[in-house]
Image (cartoon, rainbow, N blue to C red):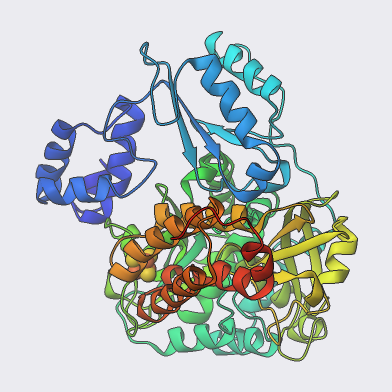
Length: 552
Ligand code: SF4
């Protein structure tokens, strides 16, 4: 059915792989050959895609797949002791499956639960605020049937640390106002608001829409990037949990502005538990004339939204890799130009916007560009959500106007005694305490939304090791400097940690960092060395003060 719905195109490949896995527990070689035959692909091609994604099983795994998050917040809050408990209870190591086929234990990258760390997924269920005792109870519960006696400890639980502007948005006021304007006026209003993409890159949204409206193509697409994989980021999950209609409204406004008829939400695999409520919300919008043909009675304005599940690959948060994935390929970033607004999904003009951007656009059209642009700073307009975790007493999602200082943020979240703060996720910047007067704004620190607080006792080489384990795992492998260079940096950091540390060796690692930055194709490789460069700049004395255990 999926193959037919996709006209036997390879865009059906990942949904088919996911369906086979759901029904049979794994995608066997026999299944891959059959899928290849149905889609007219080579079996090796199917294998290559299936093995790229972490959440597609090409070998048998347990009935319960336990994925413990190893993001830095989880590690700081005791993920290793939880890991030991799980290993003891199950009698296996990470990467193994119990002989009875019941449990598989795996580490995974960030699952977007950093403010309630440590956290893990069991199949698609999230368990947070874990302790060894809770982990033990959850395993017992699984053994007793899971469904019959669901765990009540450590579930997601939504806590908010500040009131969000979204909660005061009048339902679909933005869409109604947009339809009272011409499409060009809508793009102009978004441009006048001055909003820049909230995913991290900060490209002006109004400009993107204007260019997409002018681009030539038989079809145009609106893609919502809900692949929130940057470690330490969970704000988009909060928006999708509570304010999904704002995102759908924003996509519909974007479709009107650029002339698109089809929208897709690329939802990360770790958020599969959100799927039923998002599907229900989409269906309710269709029933209410907010999606489908002649939206709100406007003849000729037809637009619908489909949900596409990611399959576990951080690099797919990069917009061209995301498009490759939507087309049924490995998530390999493309060369740019051409940009997606000219040549995107299926070769057609495509607007890719982040969840928060789309939700904010609904508010802009609802209240007007002047209201939005009156908030923030000269080059950073509006309000912004920050996901805060780590060594602070009040982790959570906070809304601030652009322009507050790191120090002001830390006071609000109870992180006053911090040694350093990582802003913008692992690819972002490490800010030492001496620079806490810096401002969160594009004039200074323009970030996607992740803030991880490091207390006075944190060893910054621990932090760097965790980051490079992540980058090594998540590199797509296309370019050698990123694929092999990050492995070398990880080895180097481990050598430093073991005391094989000299000034000369540290300088060599920094030189390698610079090579990786200039020779890598996408943001992952260009930004992964940031952490080591920052530690060398701000904490070099601390590293070199470690006792040297032999020459390296
Ligand atoms: Fe892939 Fe890394 Fe190259 Fe990006 S920089 S394309 S993640 S190998």
